[in-house]
Image 1: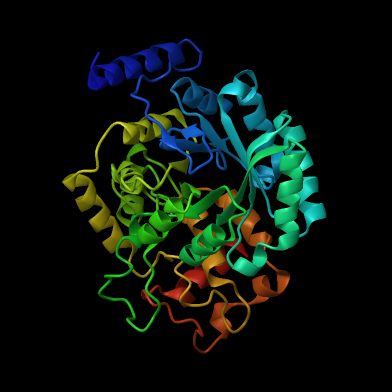
Image 2: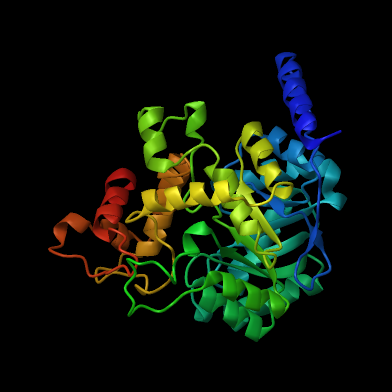
Amino acid sequence: MSLSSSRRGFLGAGLSVAAAGAAPATAEVPVTYRLLGKTGLKVTPLSFGCMTTSDASVIERAADAGIVHFDTARAYQGGNNERMVGAALKSRRGKVIISSKSQGRTAQAALADLDTSLKELGTDYLDIWYLHAKSDPAEVTDELLEAQRAAKKAGKIRLAGVSTHFNMDRMLKHLAERGQTDVALTTYNFAMRSVAADKNRDTSAPRTDMTAAIQAARKAGLGIVAMKTMAGGTVRVARGDRLYGAEPRALAQELGKPGVPLAALKWALKNESVDTAIVCMTDHDQLQENLRAMAEPFTGRDEALLAAQTARMEGVYCKMCGACKGVCAKGVPVPDVLRILTYAEGYGQFALARERYLELPEAARAVRCGDCGACSVECAHRVRVRERVGRAQEMLG
């Protein structure tokens, strides 16, 4: 059976079964595997990011389609995400890889999070346990690394990981050199491909080459898991998604075109040093589209779509390069705020964005960009920092 005929059969079956009130049928796609660093684990290039998922049947269907790695975190959906993921994968536990994360800053807090994660997921162990959202080497403390070693010795985790959203190239180099981490979860997307060659870039700013950084870290033995591959999200506007009452046509002009999400994922996966990419999927249509990334090559049409998307994102999307040092003179963590804003504008997840925004320090949330005469942060890539952070303050504060 050809891939195209398989898809047609799947879509037809999905419609007929759904009409009968049952779960859609599982898609037939060629499944390939990549080794996760030097861990010995095999993962499919596409993995499932469960952060925004509330429908367990999408997770179950992904597992039926051959996806083996599912990622959640203690903080997602107030802890409810882990419970839902655990229930969805309960009958498949020995056949899947489950990762979760803790933002605990002490060993005691992190290990308490781990115990809670195990309870909510209904499992005795995690395959990967991440120290979450570390943006500076100093944040990966000896105490936290010792907590991971203790958890591994106790059989509560198989692999120790660190996730990083900011200063990613520096963090990957540090983790590889330190040699205490098995897996790194890092931001990586097509918007970064032009960081070094961006004609609008401030040439005095540090050069960041994330593709090279990932390749070097992978060569050193780190397992590489990519996230944020959609570069802030490209809402599926072709289906008429609405955000804050915007018309789909206007939203499409702002956020993307049909085909961009798939092109973005294929771009990340064409770097063979990326072992897998976790992608948030909220419904069966998104899952079916993203499965294609494991079977289809990156093409000239994909590049054209991403070039157009990059042009639309100019002045809007933060590339998390670290050149701005991350904090304004008033104490606002600019990259964090801009990343949170993408949850609302790019993914259509306003509740998630609001939740993350309220986790910022109170002093930072009290600042209003409109009260400043000029912004102290100058983006090397011409992001309109004051405008974008101000929008987040208005929308989420």
